[in-house]
Length: 278
Ligand SMILES: [Zn+2]
Image (cartoon, rainbow, N blue to C red; front, side, top):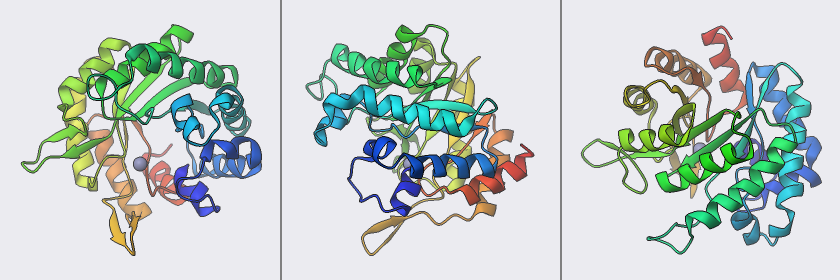
């Protein structure tokens, strides 16, 4: 979503949530393109939809309106035959003891966001790109407090340490991070995005996550390869064919759901859907 909003002129650092109302046709066109590519699940444009992140843009009072619009425009594109994942990204600050936010504050903020996403027609809640298991747990608990039957998906952004181990940015090992999400009630767990991971890394990570997930299902949404810095911008250059080949390896490694994060376009999803015969 972020990749295509920027391709349509959204400035880096701008309030992407505002597009759900001001540029709703553009957001719908992006969802339509992913549906046409074969995506069976589409993600609402609400990554920065908590009041903490919206406050950075002076829009904290618009949590309900912007998240409601995000879900409605995705629902319109999905119709009855695709899933709408209500997207919840990090609150943008650290919880105690590293930062000042309390778990109660974060849970309440996520709850306000998720209520509006569900009201707008989301079928499931995707708590994504998390680094701190405590924040992940707040997101999962917030979703289940809105609706105890709603499927909740929890995905972390991992990085690789100098000695080749996967950790969240907060330093949490894979097994511990995944276990916390499963214990909190996530039915599907996994990884999205991440720092400087190449496509082979995501396959290795998938195996580790599958080993830790128990009865929960696994979702992996890799970036389109490791980023290359070109003129100060991070470019993700994996081809659709490379992403599709990785997708089949991810299924073999234990994933049930495969998608894409930074740099992934409808062309990549089309190749993935083709390779997986979706
Ligand atoms: Zn990403």
